[in-house]
Length: 160
Image 1 (tube, rainbow, N blue to C red):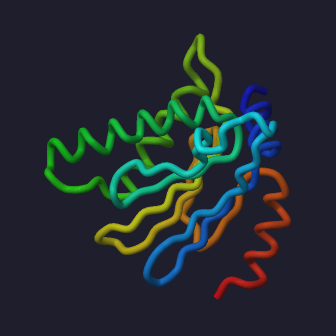
Image 2: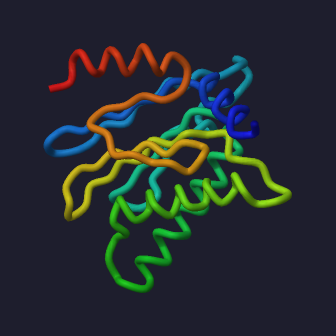
């Protein structure tokens, strides 16, 4: 039941999408402020986890900030140990594991965000989507957030 609530929060979130190309990945999102009094420069929807990995979200901003912090810590720990940047697939696995753990641990709720994680490493450009349940998949192009079904249909028709 809590996963359904988390998925509803994602579906109500601002749309975001990712498109993988031969030489990179593009992440895009809508950044609307709720009031003209809000300082737009303080709202960050796309963040770097390391020099080769970036992430965007749809859903609850406070949950996203927690995952950004954890992801950066994981990337830094990997760099400290191996002296190279963390592979995209590994940071995706670790983020997904944290999100999955929060679906079954007592006293916590699932994260109310879906993530689109893009990276470029020795395997080339990569794009992953991680859902609140902790499940993740690689994509050529995908969308999350409000109207994600229409956005995915649009991408399917035009992706080559």
